[in-house]
Length: 272
Image (cartoon, rainbow, N blue to C red; front, side, top):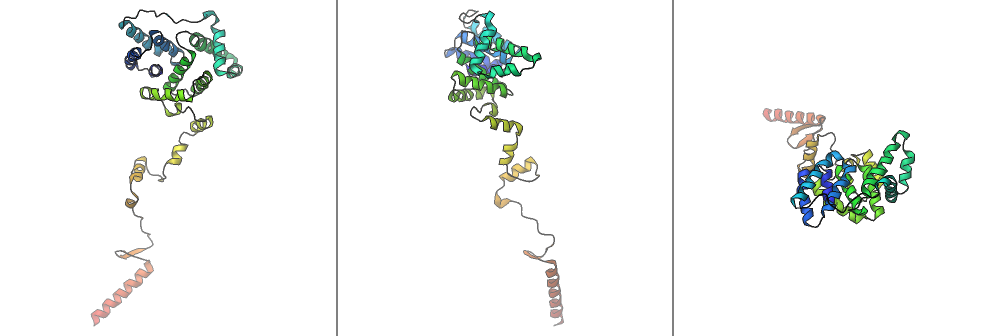
């Protein structure tokens, strides 16, 4: 089910059609399949989920399943705000009160909408357990990418509801092939400080591990990394030293003296 949620967040409609058929073959019920799509609405957005709702109906009808499916409904629609706020506090604790207290007055209606819609309209529905809905939410946010603050909040919510680290790591592992989840969204056990440092300085750790090659272009750096030590380019000779004979590097003054000696020896031999 979490794979279906990740595929919806990735907006892979064709892949979803295939995977939904496989999910129904291994025991996912029609009610659960539709509830997965409904759960994606407040996080992925109705504009993207609309296509998956039609695909789900087409797959179910092709299997002879009558619509609408019976067995899922909203609980007490008139109490959506109260029930949603209760579920939100159960998952996030005192942070909910902080969100309301810190919200500007002209944005307070967004906090109320969050409690009534995301939690009251969807997380209180029947058809899926609350633990399963939180796992679906986590898989969707991780697959969307760029939702690290929300992902951290629902990481805490999953832990509060009983989905431990082992379950979350298994979820991420299952979703990797279908959603190409970014690495920073998958570190369930990394510290908040480490995540903050990486966001503030995204290249610091990579730069510290990389070998230093001065101002070489990236292509030449890769070539230098692959070059064995024995094949490194030889050092350039000191310009203050002059090569007189191959393999014989002498100081300029000494070279001049050697030239004079050789010249005098030549003159003496000719005189003889």
